[in-house]
Length: 308
Image 1: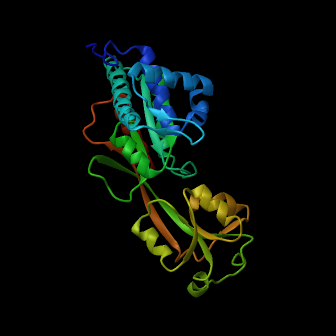
Image 2 (image 1 turned 120 degrees about the vertical axis):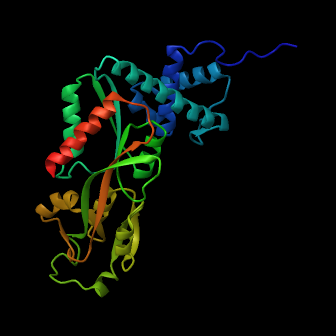
Image 3 (image 1 turned 90 degrees about the vertical axis):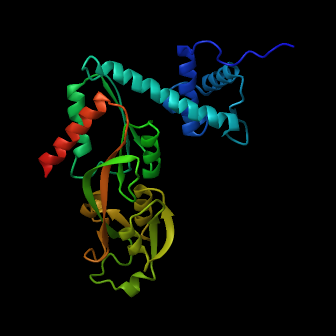
């Protein structure tokens, strides 16, 4: 009886790595069409690459067609193995480069949305410093929700993340960055905009947009006496709804400042309707030494100390 030749019985070639990188991007972007921009290749080329990978592995990795893109059970397992392999390859490259005491490789950072307007530019300043020290360092920034950043740091896809501290995870190190203040805002088209005093009873009758992501206990307490009738997955979505003139919503003061200065928004009873959120830089505990990450953390700590 003829025995089947195992898939990938030989060495993994550069072409296989390329196919796996394409596969990872397709999965993370949710399909061929969404992956075109990130990969900068045509949908037809992506389809060919996926077919080549399936043939190489002798496995069906995904379903694609009118019903949309979805992974098979084997595809989900191969995706998990792909993340491990690509992470190990990048770590190997970083470690080899560190032997030369030369900053060359990638620094992958995940950041929660809309922090660029924070007056304390710790993350930005430290990136500028490490780029000055290592011109060949490739900086990759991913804007994604906090929970996804935590997972990506834990599994090695990200070297560092910047997240609000909701609940500290045992597998992560935390470096405190700054405290962010959020207040309740309305737009210039809202009935409350010209009122000098607003009562809690009045606020309880008005529509409020809430964040559809994890919040601190202090933030959640602010919503308890308000009528939440809409949600948004990020701060930009909250701002969109506030600017309709139909909703109130909490925004960080640094983020809302542009509209306040233009007379398009104002804070409602800011002494009472506000809360603070602490932000930290997170890294994985027990990860192997990484010269680029260690250098960046050192620069980040120096930036924080200089600002305090």
